[in-house]
Amino acid sequence: MPIIETKDLTKTYKRYKKAEGLRGSLTGLFKRDYEVKKAVDSFNLEIEEGEFTGLIGPNGAGKTTLIKMLTGIIAPTAGRLSVMGFYPNKLENAFKKQYAVVMGQKSQLFFELTANDTLSLFKEIYDIPKPEFEKSRDYFVELFNVKELMNVQVRNLSLGERMKMELITALLHNPRVLFLDEPTIGLDAIAVKQIRMFLKEVNENKKTTILLTSHYMEDIKQLCKRSIVINKGLKIFDGSTENLFNTYQKYKIIHISFADKTNLRN
Image (cartoon, one colour):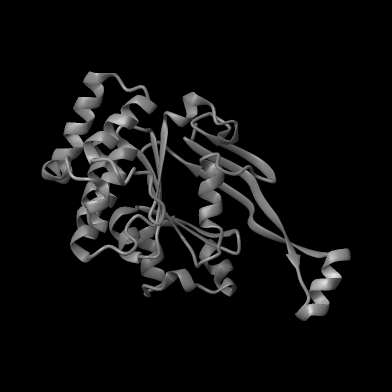
């Protein structure tokens, strides 16, 4: 059984359309016109345990919406969804303790605390036994070579150092599935390389299933054997990353036109 599985997964939003100017504002007080937008449209997906999969597409394609449904942050409008045998939107404790999510533009760290204190807090949140906590913490601290940063306030860390702490915090409870949304955004080349090496080792050594969204095609190329391209909420490619790059010799693959849908599926 796949660790992540969706069938005809759909998410729609109803958006208010206001006519231009003061007249439009006044008319909107009494009569409103709405449009329905499909952020994710009949999306079918199967990911096996231990896979490292890339999810790419232009801004507004539906990538983040998909991840939010897979993590239970928002509920789908229609379709079936299973992650580790759970329906994410029920937000069962047994489910929440088996996955982690890192969003490059949102932090789960407490900026007034040190990195050590932050990890100790998450130990209590996830009810991690002390021996398991210490083993996991020491493994990641050594892997990322951040021992000298553990007693520094998070607010005083650089962007790259904070992202390392974000990943350590997310992986502290040894989740089976890790969702990453733009984890290398804004980082310098050295930090990006370190994070790629870190993620690759976690996937290979701990067999963590990872779903990565990124606009940096080198992230996808270096880390993901499988890539999924999404555009306007529709899946237009699902297959080998090598085949994708060999077929489309551009680094701006995220701009693949919708006219290419037939060729991509082939």
